[in-house]
Figure (spheres, rainbow, N blue to C red):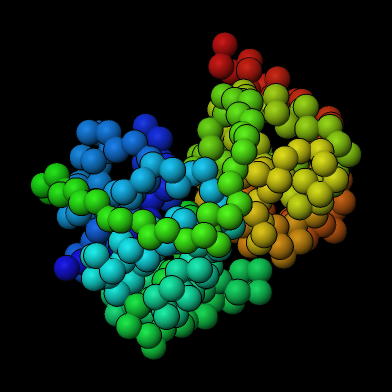
Length: 317
């Protein structure tokens, strides 16, 4: 029986880095199983095996995505029971945390969110107060549910591993959980840029862009980077909320993080402080962002960023 169960929800053609992180953590807790939704290709199954998964559980229905999170929580509870898991790991996304809360009720389990580290004995390290402190917590219940922040672990394959076995679990019907049905979806336009949470380079803008992300997008395209933003910029409607980096947004850990027109408040810092190199552009010399930046440029971003873009394009030929 598995000791850890990892929830991987509709990964697409390849597993995301965050899923590989969860699998790496799960191996430290014992035998690992996966509760999987979506199409399970041979390549994805091979990757799951390479990262230590011994069993992949599939739901008895392919209708889970047509509802809100209730049916997914019911499926995950059934998979946890089938696997005998004592720890269930999910992404720390808004949906992941909602599923974790519902799962905690169904399994009478302790729920720990915002996890940035896990010990083999199940002790979880949490990032609190906008990343200013780390705390440790351990559930006293027989099952622990952990929602884990991305980009805090280095994914590592298990080495030689056999292809995982597959099993199907029944999803119990629940009239309340199935009461709200998704009636329509609109596909988000593809930008061609990498996923923000997994990008090696991020160019982020804040209040200082004054609604114009054009120069930052040009720089991002020249670098092959993702575009991020502060909460002030997303709340103003200048860019989608899925671009928000920070305490209540996406946590990133790129090789290079370029901050333009962002003050560097503690909420922003919580989402990008593990970046390898931070470059800040701000015309306010007293901006807090310069306290965490490796390189700082005091200047108008609308002059600095286009110059950087032009030089990069020139060097690329």
